[in-house]
Every structure is written in structure tokens, then in C-alpha cells.
Length: 421
Image (tube, rainbow, N blue to C red):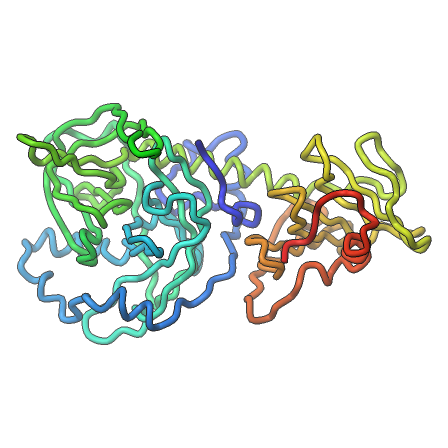
């Protein structure tokens, strides 16, 4: 089963830079590739006390990095900053950065690392010695998850001064049994640990399903590279530094050794493409012109306004059952604004105003806490740009639509619905 994170409605993905070639992006995905913006979402700093606890075991002098062969040292130093530490109240895992646009990045990880959470804490690798970058953590937003494949994508804002390496995606057909591979992750909380091994097999497998957990099914790469809890979600790479899999599990049974598995890269690429399709659908919905306010269509309600100066009409655009997901507010002369419940028609999370030259400006509350996260501008040619609104500015979504909010508060709207608060 797949579900999208709340931030999907405000994201625009550019596929260049993550190893997905132009030939692989066709049809519906191609329009996304032509964009130039990336995800803009509110990022909060995690309290320093939590960070000190999480990072307290780090070795700032990097003694453990000096005993490897020259090739391994070079590979580790090239890629380690592209591995993030994902943490929540019940544990931690790893993530591999597969895309960045400016300071906004996307990491692949396991579904079982994030579960059904909307947000996780994202920590960055510290440099040797003192590095203030390591004392900050971003709030990661789970954009898409797939419990069957045991994969998820987490978006976050890079808080380090240095750019993060991006893991290019290998082609599965190029992966060979017997080739050397490496893993970077946080086994048992031993952060940014490096391990080597060889590929033992490539196959389609099913696993899980115990204790109310979902049953997983995916193409996996079997490897002798040692992994432990905490490695989950981290990269399995070839000698070129290309991502060939996402480490997911190690079998520990009697009379069995070195049975470790990673979700194959083709599954990662497929989930990324599915995410782009979802984003493109939302982008097209946001860019569509609003319904005419003066004409009550068959899929719209009566006027619920108690004030003759303006009209309030609900329309069923993306849903078929009450409450309507789109609300139109207009006066006798013009359309004033639309209000939408993108993720849930009972929770209004976006207000759209007309803009210059037949464009539109949308104020979006992506995490439904009542405050605007992103302002999206769409011009008359459908070109879209996004502006991040920091939480400290506290622009409340309901304040942008006082007529509709007042009608809801006074009970003039006969549906169970409200603005996100």
C-alpha cells in the first residue's frame, strides 16, 4: 500500500542530478523535468539537547577512518556526507541522498525506518574536529512510502554549509554477482560506519508479515556485506559509488551466515517515478483555472452566504461525496478566492487568489497545522514557482479567507469541515 506525505502537494521535482536519464523520463514525467524549482517546505531545528544525545557517540577525530585501504578511504570520503541519520522517538535508521536542488534534498530509505510517520529528524555527518553543522537537524517530510517494497522518500532542507553528495542510480542489469560492494550506515547507532562485501545473488523475494507487519515483496540484492539494525535505509554501492540498493535486512537463523539483503535500485527508481506522477497531477490541479463563480454547475452547491455582498458556493471537483473539496467566494463583480481541501475535503489546506495577467497565487498549509508553509505562483502559461514561508512568520491560513471561515464558525455551512488549525 502506498501513501503520500502531506508535502507532495507543494513539491515540484527536477529529475536531473539524481542519475535518472532523460530517456527514462517520458510522457507525464517529462513535464516535471522541464521545471526548475524543488521542494520548499518548512524546516524546524531540533532542540540541541536531543541532538547532543543522538550525536554524543561520534568520534570527532575520525580514528576509525584511517585504517582502510586507499580505495575504500576515497570511496567513503566521497560518499559519506550523502548518508543521513534518520531518527524518531522509537529508533533510528539511515538514508541515501539521491537528489538535491539548492538546499532542498531527497533521501531514499526503508518504509520500516519511517513507518507511517509524516516527519522524522534528519542529522548530517559531522566533520572531524568541531563542526557546528552537525549540531543542527532538519525536519524531514515523508513524501511517499510503499510498505510492499519497504521503501520511502524523505525530503529535507540541507543545513550544512557544504553540499551533500548525491548517489547516482545504477542500472540493475549492470549489477553482477561476485562484484565488490560497500555499505555506509549507522549499525546499532555506530554512526557513519563503513562495511564491505560481495554480491551473492539477485532475486525476487517475499518476507515479513509477522506481528501485524505488512508482507514485503521486491527485487533484492543478496550480499555478504555485514549490516545490522541502524543500517536500514542506507546505501549499498558499487566501486563507482553508484547506488545499487537500499539496505533493508539481515537474516539471523541457525546454521546461516552472511545473508544480508538490499532493495534493488530498480525498485527505488520506480518509486521515484511514481512520486513524480503524483506531484504532476497535483501541479496540474493547482494550475487549472477556477470554476466560474457566477455559474452554479451541476456539481456545485447552493449559495450558503448570509451576506448579500458575496456568494459562497461549494463544488465537488476531486471528490464525489460531501463535503465539497473546493469552495468559491465571489462578489457581484468578480471571483475573490477559492479554498481547497486537497488531502481531505473536511480539512481546508489551501487558499487560491487571482493574480496579475490571469495568473493565480496559492497559499498552502502542507502539514495542516493552520499556518501557511508555501506560497505557489502560477502564471497564465502554467509556469509555477514556490516560496517558502518560515513558521516564525505565523501566516494563518484561515485569516486569508474570512468570509468562508466566518460562515463555517457560525454554522452556515451544513457540512462537518474546518480550516486546518
